[in-house]
Length: 244
Image (tube, rainbow, N blue to C red; front, side, top):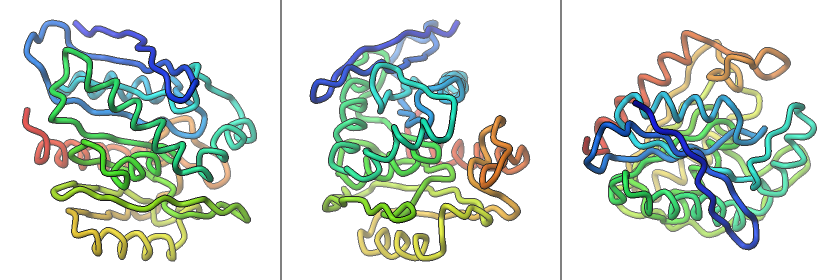
């Protein structure tokens, strides 16, 4: 039977409401996977992914990077929430690091055996988590934002402190206009120079948000075939780097 609960934590005065899911029939500590939500907040999609991960045998914790469990309905509202954290990478790292530390304290999780996944803005978030050098074995970025600019907006970047033996899997859509070729080349160079274990997989005929069933306008488009392939790639990745 799956247990679900809200876990409160705070970071620099912001109250956050994470979402924890695990199989309560399992008594031993299990590997954990932290989830970073997309730009509309800790919504039903992020929570459903937590449930799917719990069914795979992980303890899952969906972080609340906006605070107060905020979710919004429109792209404009989401942009207003996301943009400050996209720009202020130091604060973004603090938000996701606080979620990770809260996750590690949960009695159901093996705190030395944690991975992370993120979608869209969340994909960027888990990459920043690895860049900060926190205790996470590896991460998967699903159609993540990879660059330091959005339109005319330039992010304030932080130094990178990748730890050895960290792994990163980036799953990208070939037709994702939010991830230009220069951003792909830049992060490939960064990761290679950091000498960590990395892989970037590009799926043909796929736009931004190919994992999200409700994505169906403009640059956003759900692709059920690719979504299945990408999730299976994630499963193989964590089967390799996390000890179950």
